[in-house]
Length: 144
Image (cartoon, rainbow, N blue to C red):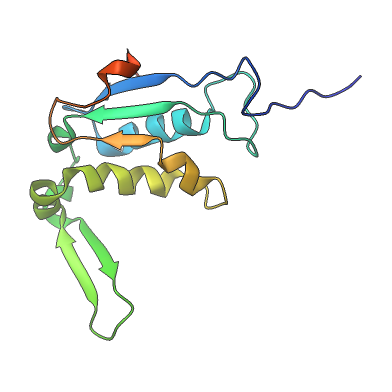
């Protein structure tokens, strides 16, 4: 008996375009569902070493919900590499300035840190409002 391995160029591995509305959804649960879809874990032919996931478009990123007191207490950190280069931004400020980065960083945190991660994250498209430029791809509604 031989084992069939999946390749990204196989005929049955068509990538779908999925549209996710982030309004009133908890950030962590949304990030888990998006990460699993980007990796292809919802497919029957999933292989962790092969990139066969779908494209995901997220709209209404500014309306995503943080549970508890995380809007006041959660802090996003960046470090430039220089002395004194630590930047700390509260979640409320991050939501005003860059709500798309909140979702992108949460999804990146859910991904395995291997050579496929960067290529997988290029298929994630996050937008602040309801408009997106991917109407030509005919995205399907994604419910989790």
